[in-house]
Amino acid sequence: MNKKPCKECPWVIKNNHNNTIINFSKKTNKSHNCHMTEGGGTNLWDVKEKTKCQGRKEYEKLFV
Figure 1 (cartoon, rainbow, N blue to C red):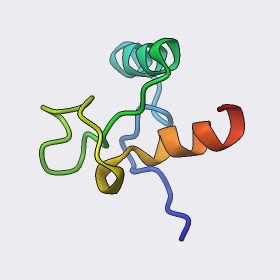
Figure 2: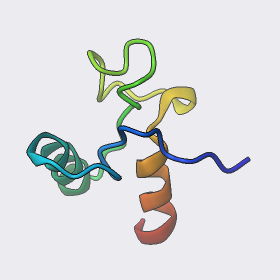
Figure 3: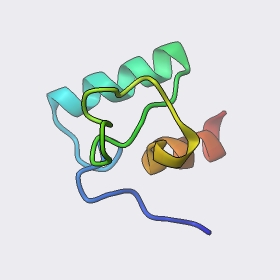
Figure 4: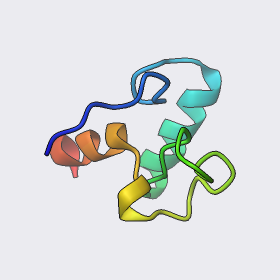
């Protein structure tokens, strides 16, 4: 099942904070959790497949 990124996804909404997340994710080639899920905002980089950011998943399909 293909899900859409959440409405506040850093891969969709561009601002300085979100750009920092995206750039770090690309530079280190690390996925991150969706910040809208429970614990996602405080535990962004301890990735679990069920809470993985959908915007990052779409990026991985295209570029990784």
